[in-house]
Length: 233
Length: 233
DNA sequence: CCAAAAGTGTTCTTTATACACCCATGT
DNA sequence: ACATGGGTGTATAAAGAACACTTTTGG
Image (cartoon, rainbow over all chains, first blue to last red; front, top):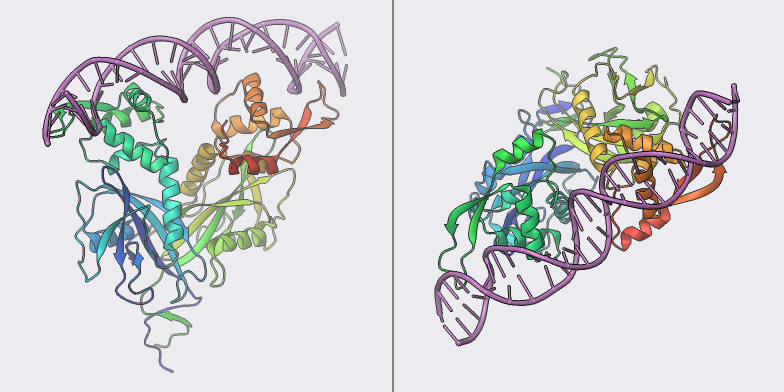
């Protein structure tokens, strides 16, 4: 029996992939980017972008590469989430995946869908179709992670455009934390941290008092962190 | 050229291992369990227990199996830490490791060192020898993780014997958080959460007023969590 | 002039911090 | 009797929570 497979080892090895949960925020709604699978298994089902890790890249670089290849997104916030390794998580055989999550402003980036005949689309996290593999488990963990993290690290700004109003910022926190927040207390708490720069620019063409735009002072935040500052909202 | 290697694939695959940072607490000191490597690479250097993931086990089960094989420890708290995948992290080739951390009471368990000619020993986290591979990086991340987590989840009790004094509990928090704590305020905060059961038992044979023993009410904690309770210290 | 969201302070309650003396036990 | 760590309460400061009216703008 001839063996045409070229890469041989003394012991069996699981395949190693990455998957990336990409969150976007759209003024009112937290969304995730899904790709419709064009091949079996789970053909026609939606899944997170991802693929096999190559031998000359670490998993984070692999996740970034797949992200760019499948959606056109690059240079966005990305962080390791968890490694999923259940023996039967992929019907094709043993596949271990290192899952990442990424945050992107929907206003700033529009994914280039359909690069390779795969449809890409944003779905509200409250209206997710049936997902391929164990991707529902991955999504639950990603949601849990950002919910826990947004209060203690300024990751929320990655989901907003560079200029944003206080109401947009508050809606983001309300959606992620799944709880209503008091407008005055929220403003007070954020302004007290002194990490927002008030811009000389207001909303245009809204049928109410125009809100002021703010931006996040990332430089100042990083300097404060070095001095022991802890972000908390 | 004949190939004796039996497991062949269309594309190259990294090897997949687990490593486990085991923390123990010894009345005054936070320690980690290290194994002295008997073979190259890094022969004679200290490393965390770990090994290759088998095809019929997920990474957590693999970490638990290696833990038991190399130290005799089982049924202890264990949780995934991070996956380390740098291309050059192992001189033998491409090896990706899923790192875990475990917590154990030193009083309760003594590891059975030297099962397979490998020496196992506890080292204070403030006096760690040179480690093999990227294990120093893994340790830093594990320390950072428990430092962040001990304030918001009751993982500290995993490091203590079932019965402990308030002073032992406080010392644990002081060592992990690397900061002194006020004795009265610490007691007050913990007692207010009402998660400690005061036992009818005191220290024996100490040359000062004997401290009362307490134990953690895990059942009550789990019930409170279901009602939305958040542990915080 | 009406609808819709922006902007703004004060009071009250809860939580955090700082701090010192007496007690029990073994040597 | 003394050295050692155990146990306890109060006063002050800081932070969090609750809450309503006026402003601006477009339609």
